Image 1: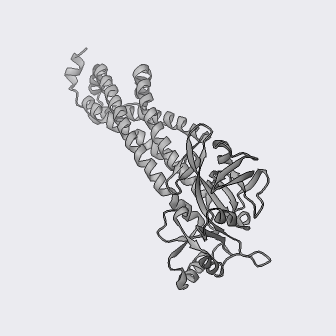
Image 2: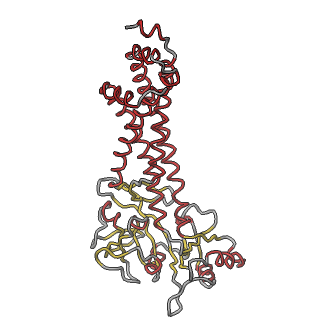
Image 3: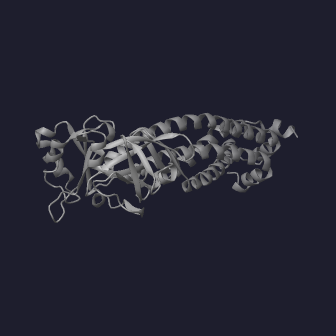
Length: 388
């Protein structure tokens, strides 16, 4: 015979103060747990949105990122003669040979941070149609002009239209703002590739990105690429996969550090739930004795108290997850380990994160309620009734 659920719910309502404190403790831990996972997922999603499966990015093997990759002009010319590269009606490859450098800019809220400056070729905007002009105008090719990503305009001083940015011994004028729909390009500044190479006295690009002539041509291109002996030091990847890999180190660091802190907090919440359930057992000794005298078995009593603990933690988990979901309306920025430059991203919630958070809450309830539930189930009927 099972103990009715209404009995369990009534006891939760009766003990409003202890119930509320326990729910709050679990909610705070779940909030932190979910926020950490949402932050890591937000970084990944931002960088994954940066790339496209229809574009291929070529970099030097073993390079940690674009700023450490080098592709000389001769190699770039060889790459752009390979098959399966999309071309304009005039026959020009839809590709962008790009030097990528990092400069320092002052932040609006104080301090200095690194900003990625990307030199792009003429076809860069056809290659990445998600990058659209938001205000101002596009930079003139052959001029020391730049367009700033929307995140750069918001977060860095001197990056608005008409401002001048000084680096590489010269002044560059910000003439426009571009928006990439939340992708990593929002945290970059773009200018003419040749002007950037000249300013930094460089003769080599960092990466080359081009569009495939058809979506399913990636494997065919890789086969042609690997047959070319002069390209053995370089590696092709889909643009999406490249930027996804760039996010892994940062996301892993956030997860490991955040979960470590969360586990410490969860120990406190679990102990709080345990204390609450032990107090419930002590205050309801006569009730337990009565239930046993009415014929309810030990496992029914154990299940009732364990269900009560799981309900407490489940409610707390739901409350914590609800508050964590509101973080999706906020954007933050941090230093991306892949590029060593500022990256703006939003917290992002996924079904996996929501499920993991609720399961984490239930595990806290299970750990906190198991021993008190066993104690309640083992109470002697006679001694429990005499305690009245």
